[in-house]
Length: 261
Ligand SMILES: NS(=O)(=O)c1ccco1
Ligand SMILES: [Zn+2]
Image 1 (cartoon, protein in one colour):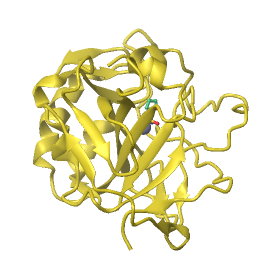
Image 2 (cartoon, rainbow, N blue to C red):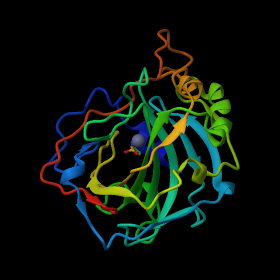
Image 3 (tube, rainbow, N blue to C red):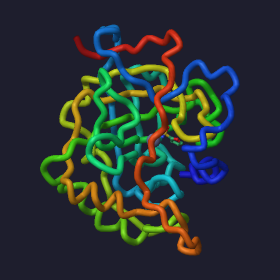
Image 4 (cartoon, rainbow, N blue to C red):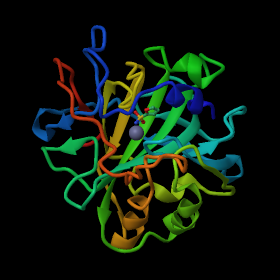
């Protein structure tokens, strides 16, 4: 997908850009469970991913993106809070330097060591990711928390490819990967709220769906994430790619809905 155009225009997110004009739906946030509102009208999520649309892994200088061919409706998301059909563009992770923190969202202030984001754009209304990224119902991101525990067999194929994209701007071909293997068994229980991208341009275009159930990965698998670098091969100073999460943002009166009681 063409998220590269978007991401290559941005500054490292830790230098938070100047105030976002009228930013009243920014992400990430802390989800206060007792303040979330059960919405019985929320439907189950319908995920249909085709592993054949998987194309490459790209180190964009602050995460690694697994990019999918989004020129047809082969890998799609609908249902849940979504009115339209959304196309999978890429997935990536955010993680910490240790297992104490790393996720962007938190549940009652509980942080996880990492968080997976599956990024989709509204293909009923727009024809390109870049168009959808500036519209208020343009994007849908599924967030899944990672916990350190048993090895994730499906993730290992991805982990084994990471040394090939150690440096910023490196790309490696990566095919036939089914991102559904990274979803928890239960995707019917989630929180959803109106938010933004957590990396610049921070556009307020995202319907977030944060899964209640986490997945488990091993300590060694997470250590390979931390072996990646923010810096390109040319740069003198190598910096480990860790703590690539944004600071949490004010809720500004938003309601977080839950699909479960
Ligand atoms: N981290 S995220 O999923 O909000 C994202 C996708 C593209 C840019 O930022
Ligand atoms: Zn993300």
